[in-house]
Amino acid sequence: MTTVALKDVTKVFPDGTVAVDNINLDVNDGEFMVLLGPSGCGKSTVLRMVAGLEDPSSGAVLLDGELANDLPPRDRGIAMVFQDFALYPHMTVGDNIAFPLRLSGVEPGRRSERVTDVASALGIGDVLARKPNQLSGGQRQRVAMGRAIVRRPGLFLMDEPLSNLDSGLRAELRAEISGLVRELGVSTIYVTHDQAEALTMADRVAIMRKGVLQDVGTPTQVYGRPATLYVAAFLGSPRMNLLEASVYVHLDRYIALNLGEQSLYLPWDDIRSRAVARYHGERIVVGMRAEALTPVAPDAAGDVLQGRIRYLEHHGHESLAFLDIGATAIVVDELSGALSGPSAGGGRLRRFGRVMQRITGRGQDAAGGPPEERPGSSRISVLNDPGRHHRRPAELAVRLAPYPAVSAGHPLAISVRMDALHFFDERGDRIDVGWR
Ligand code: ATP
Image 1 (spheres, protein in one colour):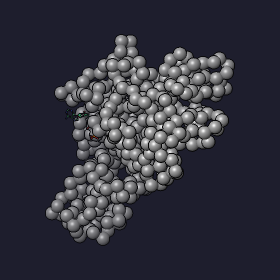
Image 2: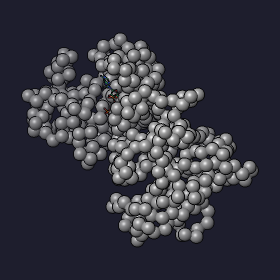
Image 3: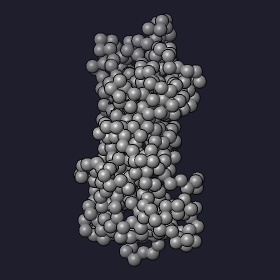
């Protein structure tokens, strides 16, 4: 099956919009690659360049190792499935699926054999004689998939194919599509802004922001070891708690991470201490996911933070407590709409609504203006540039059992798993501590 390589690919539209900014990405034979990012980050433009529907402004698109920049779309061995798939309304389901085969001159007997196979694989074998308006949304999407699969392409390109469907159907089709594509062994690039889709379907995920590739890896890698603050904040529900901390090194003993009114202590023999020690006297961002935090008795020893519950969110299977611990949160911009599932959109973000902070972009800023850069720096500081961002009091998301016997205003002590902390520098890059 087809392999794809993007080498230094940039797309600048005639109006000056930098939609894709110097991307390098490989899709291996048979791999399911998900392009993930918020609306407008350039995902569809990447897909359209791979399809040949858009020319790169610079850089190379290689298919099976061959330069394909000038190859017409029809010669790329590609099948595409879009969000707004259009079926021919006057044709039956069977004829819709068979259409690409008819165009390429496959003889009728062979055609109907292939259509029957594909339709039964997709669970729509019993509706082949119906017209599209006699189908449910999920069935119509399956027909669109069938029409793409039937040609046995070397590469599938799928652009938010499930976003018009309700959440139950999405989950069902998610599993079906990834199962089917893997069975067929066809290399796939799948575009979505839904992190749940990305993490459940992908072999590897490529996360984009403002045309720039932020991180690429397996779902476990990008979730467990995000390369940037942006990726850390983008993946996970509830979102990762991101706290401003000042670093103070007590040589050969420990590193104090001062979080405002309280501190955590990284033992000197922790392998990450050497990397964090370089920031002595400076501010960094400490990331902690809800799964790194466990409620404990108020007088518990160890790595414990004391907080007070600001408010609770009940999600049926669990409740989330949001704790005031006297720390400052760093809030990452542009994430609304990026999450699905419980706490989608981040309760706090929805409530307080606004934005906040620009980090690490080399493309346009969120308002569509030119990039603002500090002298001598190619990135924008997340911590030391007061004109560029807002901080707010941190509210640490902590998981509790459903409907706990506590309410807003209650004190709560939480134990912190120090080995599950993430560290980011003032530009939003991971403070690299090597593989552990
Ligand atoms: P969505 O999830 O909303 O589809 P996306 O991540 O796929 O977003 P793109 O459609 O690739 O994003 O668009 C990337 C950027 O390029 C956006 O700022 C968009 O407005 C801009 N853009 C897309 N097509 C054009 C065009 N033909 N001319 C000018 N700008 C464009």
